[in-house]
Image (tube, rainbow, N blue to C red; front, top):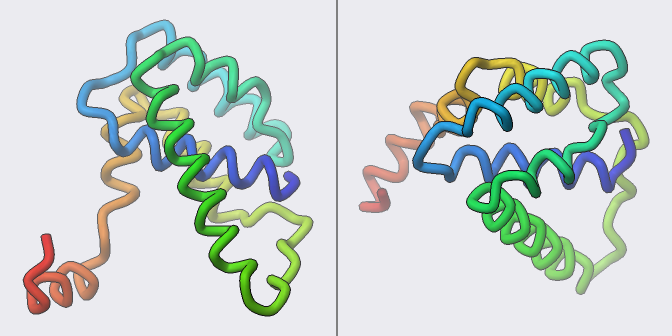
Length: 130
């Protein structure tokens, strides 16, 4: 999986976690099929863009996440040149995507995967953040 695919996959997982309602059954089914494709070939994200575009609320969040990731990359690039991204996809990202896409409710699965860990939540509580 190349760096661009990793960015798109990250944007999709982040967008799914921001949805308030489960995906429509036809869109969820397409994500389930994508999970099976990724199991067979972890270096591909298939037609992720087409699946996301089929559901406008998800597409809006997905596009916003892509812009946010691009902005963060621009901020990082103002100093020294960034370290090159690994050519191999991280197994953690791939496994997370497969687990999320393969769930019966990908939105709920994405929300539980993106929960901050206990120490982070405690630190946020101490600092008065929510």
